[in-house]
Image (cartoon, rainbow, N blue to C red; front, side):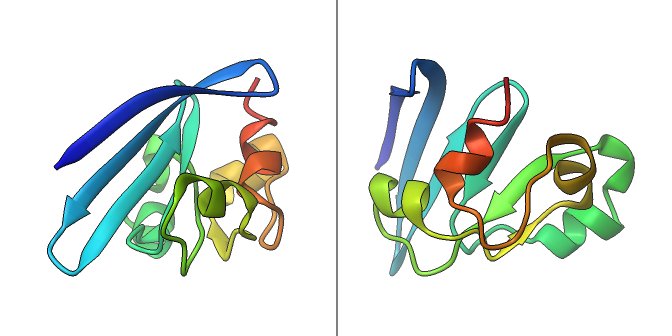
Length: 101
């Protein structure tokens, strides 16, 4: 099953996507600029093979709900997110997303 819903974080609109997969789930919170995602995100691929696309993305591991994704520390972020939006490993997903204005 796929669940998609608009969410507001401090008056900023985002989209939450939850994909139920066998033995795991895929969680994403995004807007037109970038996104945070569960551990399924391959940040190394984005940095190495797709660097030219300038993708703004971060990964949190061990999360199972929207709120866990928002409040977990980001374990890894793309180089472009660091350079352009000041994202850092260890910051919360919510803090990172709110920099996408």
